[in-house]
Length: 622
Image (cartoon, rainbow, N blue to C red; front, side):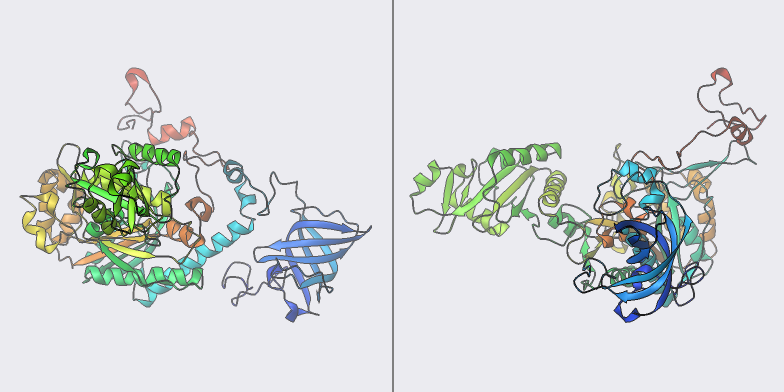
């Protein structure tokens, strides 16, 4: 296995040079008899007699066994250079678990380049290590095969994304990291100005406005691997700082942008594995909510939501009397225990439902209808019955409609929630995931576009707030509703979803000043406030802005999914913990008083003087 071309310390063709001439993990039987010089870490030492040792030598490419005849002190994680000759292992001693398992390096001379203390945890994959310890010693954790593979995959994915963008005529442009505050829906990190006390830059949560200005500037097709920062709560798929493939293009339709991004992410999947990836599917937001109960559906498995509203309307069952009744079919789970059903009911209530209806789908018995009713079941012709406390209150035609609507088979379990449409969808969508979602490592990646999002959401006070950001172009058919019914307006916005994770969002942008001002008005933003916050963008529109649109792909999430990881920390070299801390460096830390004075910042309660800068007039406390 060769290294990455162009990496530091290697020749242009990926071959090592300098202190070594081969990678440990690339040696094969074809190299038998070749002299080699290897460098790496001692993964394991096994003594054989008084002097002979078998040393497993590890570098980023893998492990190879070296036969060393010496009494020198060699311990795990020593950094060594080993020179010797490649030979075939004796018959019966091959190791099928190693790519180099058919060979070994013999007649070895060893040079210890750096000694090492025993590491605080075992560095092979056989040992489970808690995450806090791994992050405290991240430089050791990075030596493990899993992390090496993940970071090399990350490099390959980013390279594939870049090649795709360049092939499609895009130019990489770097936008500023010190930017102006913008209301794009996420908390920003503030950076105090030393030269202008009381004023602040922010770290960009995205290059949104900057890339729109590039389109006004005639760049036409822009991209960058942008570093973005958001001061939000951390979770499995979110860090304070993240990397995104950021894209913007002029004179483009929504379909054009989606085609460009589809090419890039399919290219990324191709370098991750040799599994065939299906074409990128497309669903409208309304379809996604109806079928999956979410706008980021995992389409790798079935169990789609069925609408039972009409089927149970005449059932007379009070528990199912609601504006919306949604159900899922769980194949082969009719034998689910009552205690498990009780726990699912509790989970549904936790998610916001009033309760959970369940039905076991069983073969119909030859008993009379009355006998079936006594058992809590109602026969469906000669085929199926529903076994449930609610089924005894239902006419056979209602049961027939439920079975038809869900596509139920004998042995299945049906689960249903009744309530407001948004609640029924959301609860059943979440239960669908918890009961049926396969691990990310299983199956081929499944991309899906979600389109036709609402332009606005309803805020807590009933006013309109941007569903994405305030620069999104309304759907052309809905512009007439902006003033009269803004919450009904669809947008030209689109999300890309992979295996149930949102990879990113994009939209066609507003490029006409008067339309942008109408959107601000719908958001109850006065002309004066809009000019104060976005004057530089509105002014740019006065000088000829082309129609344009763009997208941003979350690289960390993309790599995590392609690597089969459930947490993006596993594909980031130096991530933060769930609390936002860095156990390795101790960050965040307090600044020295002198540094705070220079920035004009007071920290904590300072009594009557709070708000006055110790650095003199003009300073202020944040």
